[in-house]
Image (cartoon, rainbow, N blue to C red; front, side, top):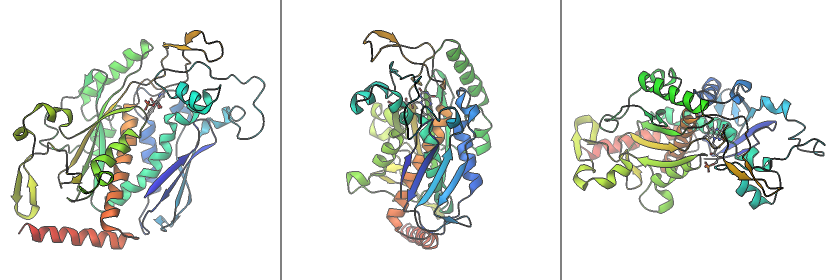
Length: 390
Ligand SMILES: Cc1cc2nc3c(=O)[nH]c(=O)nc-3n(C[C@H](O)[C@H](O)[C@H](O)COP(=O)(O)O)c2cc1C
């Protein structure tokens, strides 16, 4: 499967086209819209989220709630477009009073994008670099999550820390997280600890009052994976590389750790690698999950556990210094309506990206054009694995 998106933050709409999806996959409109709503939520979001009420419009590839096997077209309308239709018009002349963006924000694509594309208006960059685009991604990658669900794979995410406010969760690898959607989604921070939720919200309040912004960390977990998805054979086939690339494709993501992550580099081998055990009907298992579910570029049958770091939001209400592109004088960077913290939303985007990488790896392993064949192939693979551990 592949997907591509088009659209600007304040343009008419965001569009996604998803190709390579097997025929016969049941897609729920409610599920897609609920994912879009989850991406819009979280304490610390900016005023934009009160304007938008994201819902998906399907423009191709589905009939009676099932995929047809052709490209799937998805569109998410920008309600804010009505306020920008003159400044973001696809055709015609700029309005006479157009204010160009000439004070690029440090930490954003503004300056380097303007240099690269030879424009004197950073809006030409920031409209596309804006994470508003991730609404289209969530719609597109939600298809992968539905596919995985039919194969018994569940993908979820939760927030672990915001700034220095953090959830206490020492044994997250020993007992891979089993939080329910309610544990996570009832928290305004998408964090299953009520205490940590309150301390994260307080940290965001302090940051907002100081004109600051915050980043944080979150985890993405996938349960129910069969072992052997991905490959050890070539660099580009390693699932570790694919999931890493998918996560680093999300704006503001600066770190990805699989399982123990950087902590593994501090420990001796015997305290890192996961002993192999045979457990009755379960077959080959691991007595720990420090690898976070991946070995040799493949799933090993244990839950996938990935921890992701997001940097603080670059738009600051107390802006940093920048250089005015017209006057070449030092000035304060632009202030655009902005989130103070978007870690809960980034985690929702990451869930989708991880699901997309995993679903692709399943399709490569089982290579099917329709869901019936795919499910049958996965079933027979599981049966063969059982015979190998008896
Ligand atoms: C869900 C989400 C929401 C975001 N919201 C904002 C925002 O409101 N304001 C902002 O300046 N950056 C926001 N960002 C971060 C920027 O998009 C990102 O830092 C910027 O594109 C620069 O990319 P880089 O950090 O990967 O270098 C958001 C990122 C994500 C994932």
